Image 1 (spheres, rainbow, N blue to C red):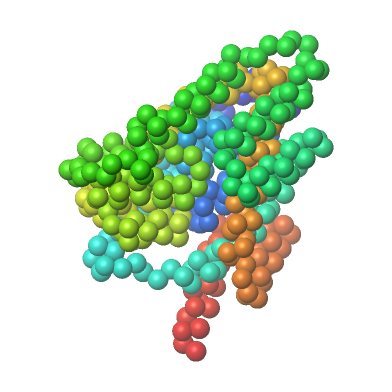
Image 2 (image 1 turned 60 degrees about the vertical axis):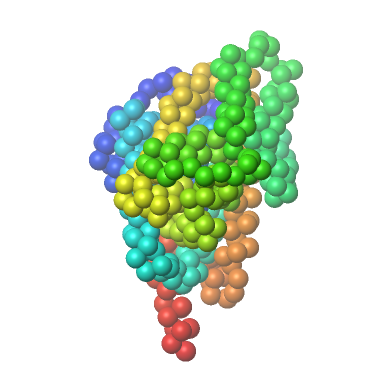
Amino acid sequence: MSAYNGELMDRTDTTTSLGELALLFLRLGSTAFGGPAAHIAMMEEEVVRRRGWLTQERFLDLLSAANLIPGPNSTELAIHIGYERRGWAGLLVAGICFILPAMLIVMAFAWAYVRFGTLPAMSGVLYGVKPVIVAVVAQALWSLGRSALKTRTLQLLAGAGLALALLGVDELLLLFGAGIATGALRWPTLETKRVPPALLLLMGAVAALALLPMVFGLKPSDAAGSAPLGLGPLFLVFVKIGSVLYGSGYVLLAFLDADLVQRFHWLSQVQLLDSVVVGQVTPGPVFTTATFVGYVLLGWAGALVATGGIFLPAFFFVGFSIPLLKRLRQSPLAGAFLDGLNAASWALMAAVSFTLARTAVVDAPTVMLVVVSAVLLLRYKVNSAWLVLGGAVVGYGLQALSLAG
């Protein structure tokens, strides 16, 4: 069980103002390139190492809680952090401020797309940003690993989880498998051999949520049909997707294709791929792909409705999981279960990092960007946001020199 004091978990710390929360997550939402793993790394840097708002153990608990529920993990982690600092008001402020900058940036891309029929060139910016993100995530993995993998058993579990994640094993299976394994290993040493109701409730709720795609019929093989396009149907489609989606932006692509392209014929394949590209190359949550789709279909109103629809379930699920998490850490068996989840969460993040590194570090300039970023982070404690912006400038400059040559 984590050394984090359960009594402290029941107390909302009000020393952080809502303004501080808003400014931090507005900045992260404006500069957090690289997908959920990079977002999590930046949050860990800001709220654990720079500000000391959370312990490493508590941060990992919240990360595991975010991994257990559907929706955008990094956004849900931001929502959790907001609640830790300022209760329900902080929950709303942190989540909305993390989403808002990305939504506005994606809206600008969508406006240009509809106006000019193509996307602005982003290859140079991405070329410079991705290597920086590799260094940021590697630093976070090192820092989180020292808290999450304290025992030999947890280290072996994380190694096995990393191998299975790279082989494509389902995220939920890895998380619950690790939790059950650590619980089973701890079982013989427990004085009270009783499974806490909160643990059963959490596992049952997640299992039920995992079955929701079947309930809603979210299968590409369903008979294709057409449906009238309007703000109401658009909102319902994105609420449904936000309620059942686990995994990365590639999983989001599959859900969007099944509903918007194959079933309702609202989008073409080309438009869908363009929308996912925008979600990937802009800062903040990848789920702002919904903003782009909504604007392409129904303008500004569609963008707002689609964004609200896909993110609304995240706020609900985080609110639902908060009381369960408090009860879980008070039980030795549930604490062991969460320790296993923390190890599996580390493994999932590491797997994403390997994938990112293979696509980001491709030549001498990108290797140099990784090395310089790592030195600035570890030796001089430079804020990662400035490194991301610097990487974007370097990448754009190198692209301009290449074109000029």
